[in-house]
Image (cartoon, rainbow, N blue to C red):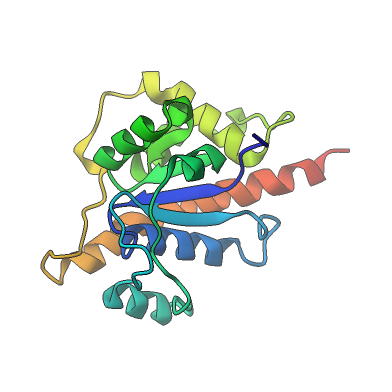
Length: 197
């Protein structure tokens, strides 16, 4: 197996939370040193070929992001093994990913857990060495698991599908800061080697 690469976002149906994460991050990375980084998403119980949820499509369109070509796909062990960093919407999905590919548990987090763990340590502690940016970030977050109190309820991003319509803005608001931080970390690490003498 070759070196793992890219970020894989995971939710349940791959029609709301994880495509919103995927397309928002890809948009944030466009025009940066990390523009070519693979970003994808999948669902633990996806109906392959489903379209993105209309509420998510409207929100993305308001941000200038076209989601018309997006189709849902099912999570597989191969997808997990292929990813450098796996970020799930909920702790249940994190457990399902770990069951699919136990050897990737050290690079699997919920999106909000990952951001919380990264922020326990200064960004300056991240070491690139021969690793890529995702491997370095995953290693730091994994190391910081011991510094944090156990599973936290706010590590889950609530599924807005089949919830009251007002849940969609709350879900977007829960995801946005995490994606912004993730984009800043990735682009910062991608640009770091250029600063070496």
